Length: 286
Length: 286
Image (cartoon, rainbow over all chains, first blue to last red; front, side, top):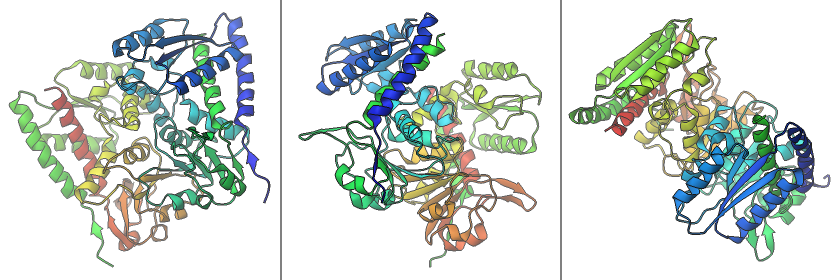
C-alpha cells in the first residue's frame, strides 16, 4: 500500500491565511479595516488559549481584534449589552462569543442575539437554517475548514460515502448539512452516527471518508476503518499525554489513504475559516 | 414471515384529528378560534386539490381558514403584502404559502417573510435552524407526520439505521435533522442518499427503516430492501394509473415488516400535522 498521506492542516491554514492577507490588503485600499469582536467570559485556560490563537491569527493577516473580556460572574444582561454594542458598531464586521460559557449563562440564547450578518461562527439559528436551505451565509468554521482541507488536497467529496461520528451543533450536524448540498464540495452520501448508534463499528467500516467529532479520545480503532479510508479527526482532547484526537492515530493511520493529525490537522483550519468568514463579513461592508 | 403491516396513514390521521378536535374545543372555550391563512397563487390543479384538502381538514376539527387566492401573474410585492397582512392579523395563528409557485416568484424569499411564530409549515430559515439546533418550534409537516405515524404504530426509531432517499427541503433534510435529535423519537443513525449516490442499492439495503422522498415513481425495487425493513413512502406522483409513490409497492411490500401505501400513507399524515402545528400556534396565543 502507498504511504499514508498526512493532511497538514497547519500548512494549508497558512495557505488560506496568505490568500486572506491579499484580500485584507485590498479591503484596506478601499478604506475598510476588517475587525473581529471576541466576547469572552471568565478565565478558563482552554478558552484563553483559543482566544489568544484567534487574536494572533487575525493580526497576522491584518484583521483588527477588539476583545471584550467579561468577568466569570457577569450577569446575562451585561453579555447581551456587549453583543448589542458590537451589533451596532459599524466598524465591527464579525462577532464571536467564545464557548463554553459559565453555567449561569445560556450560550444558545446569547448567540441568538448576535446579528446574523456578523455571526462569523455561523451558529445563530438563521445561519444554521440558511445552511440547511442551501444558501449559507457563514458556515461554522470547523465544518468549513474540513471541506477546505479536502478541497485543497484534491480529495473528492461528491459521490463518496461519508460517515460522521458525532451529532454536535458545532461540527457533526452542520457538516452533515454542508456535505449534502449540491455541487462538488457536497453531493456526498452522508451518515451521522453517535453515542446511541448500536453498531458503530459496522457503520464506520462503510465509510470512504470518516469524520470524527465526539470528544472521546481514541474512540476510533483500526478495526473500525476499511483500508484506503480518508480520516478527519476533529477531536481536541487534553490528556496527560498532551492534546490528542478522537482517533487512535498510530493504529488507524497505517490503514488510511489520508488522515489528519491532532494537533495540526483540523484545529488550524478552524481558525483559518473563522478568519475567512470575518474577511467575507468585511467584504459585505464595502 | 409474518404478514406485512400496512401503515394506515388515513386512519392514524383520523386519530390525530380527533385529538386535535378536543384541543380546539378547549381553545374555543378560552375564546380563541384557531385560524389558518392559506396563501395560494394561480390555479394549478394539484395545488387546488391540496388546498381543498387542507381546508376540509381544518373545518372538520373547527379550525377556521382564510384563503388568499392570488392571480397566476401576481407581482411579488402583492404576495408580500398579503403575507404581511396575515402576520399582523392577531386572529390568524398560522400562515402557509402553497408551493410550488409560478416561475416569476421566488418561493424561498417569500416564505422568509412569514413570521416564524406563524410559519406552521416550518419552512422559514429560523424554524429550520431551530430544528437543527434541537429546539424546534414548528417541524415541517411531512417529517413530523412520518415520525407521528411510526410512534402511533409503536415502531421504534431510536438506535435504528435509517436511510432517507432524497435530500429535499420539505422532507429529506428536515427529517434527517429530526431523527438525529436526542430522545425516543430521534436517536437514529441516519443516512441521506440522493441522485448523486453511486451505490443506492447497497445503501438502501443497509436500512432498517427506509424513507423515500424523491418524486421518482417506482424507484425502490425489491432488491433494494432487506427482509423485515420498515418502508415509508413519501412520494406522491401523478401517473396515468393514478397517484403512486416512489416505492414499487407490490414487489417491496412482501419483503417488508411494515410499509405505507400511496395514497393513504404519508399524505394524510402531512395534512394532520399541519393542523397540529396550527392548533399549537393558536395555543401559543392563549
